[in-house]
Length: 428
Image (cartoon, rainbow, N blue to C red; front, side):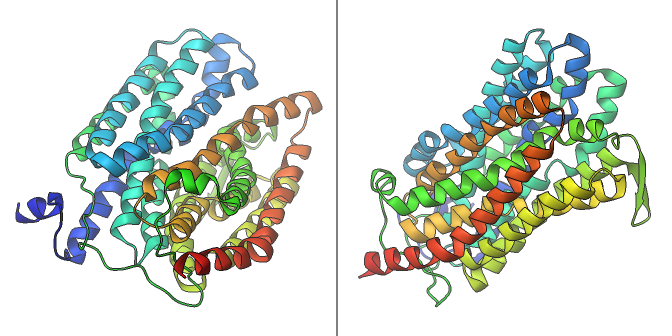
């Protein structure tokens, strides 16, 4: 109780590391609870299509709308968090998440699913932006790791519910699955919201400085950030890397169906599952693990050096999945590689943004950059239209692979020297 009072005081002494880690764990738990609203969607698409007869591209607009509203309102939600603390935003987010999937459970029209995913997207965005921003504030000394662990909750949070969601869709119908998973996850987020606090001045260690990790001592306001050209370079890189991963996330099962590998049993590391179920499970786990892993690596060797490595692996991984993925074993392995090399954007970009523009407005500024995910989501239905018109995924995969290679080169050739100069000028 004493620590709770200490956490809400205007100024306070340094808190213990255990208290900081407790706040981080609460944020991670909330992220786990909202993960299925994005990553579970792919399992509902075939049944929605079979039940109502709509074309896949039209259905996937619901996913795009979810991501748009999840991301583009985060700066507004971040503004409230930076001024009034994290609890209220996460509380409302949990309520909206539950309502969103409850709407999906009753929907019989495309507009109904669009509305349900918009509501869920607003709620999930409030939780996501708040928890990542709070992690960045509590751990200025370990920003990459803290942001990565928090984002891992979102990336890997749905891994253990891949099989239960598919089983419930099969046994009880997708409408009941929407209802019970939506309500259950939303209620847990509501409970967790009451235990979240933001740090006050003096409670956390100072930002670190080393040759590889450039951190600004100046706190840029959101309006100032929007006027910085380097912000828009990061935004562009976020979009072109994010688009490929979101395309695979939304279409993992449809791709498996089109390549005729979805129901083929695959045995790896002593386990046997159908290719899509195995791939989805591994993808969620690796998509979660990559966030703290590459976040930790970036704390050691620098953000841009890590981006160069990760984005390069992603480009090669997407090309390899396109080339070899018609084999069910390679489909599982290479989709895992794609997600491992993709998920780190959700730790690298927020920590890079806060390193560059300061911690005071971290939630809002990272939220502004996070809207790039919404812009990337616009590519998902476009990819579906390209696939439908051409009859194959070839062009979609080749463009995605090339975009990642471009981002890899931009990180090391352009972003690294430019950001070093920006931070040096701010600190002078």
